[in-house]
Image (cartoon, rainbow, N blue to C red):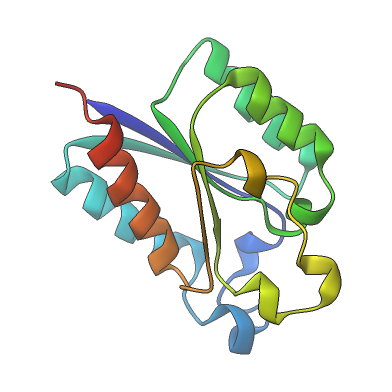
Length: 147
């Protein structure tokens, strides 16, 4: 069975309330429930983790040494532009990953145009809303489905 870990960074726990013109009205729970349904249909195990704390995201990634997954889908949120530490943790665990963003970072403030993750990501999906998670999940299952 394919195993996928979805990690969400800071402020994504308040989706649906936070800047709905930018991020929409779906909550993180809505997104996770939708992904769980798709994963079940694809015979895939999916786990979710969200934190506003950089060190907790790093510790969750480090757990992949003892409990590996086939791929990670991560929306680093504001850590996209600041966290060399999360980048290093991803490189350390050496798991293929998808970088997902609800909004199109390149249509936003200049400081959001740089990502510490894009150059090492398997794929980057931005500006597609919550569908970006679904596209990443479908691609991961197609690429990493166990025979």
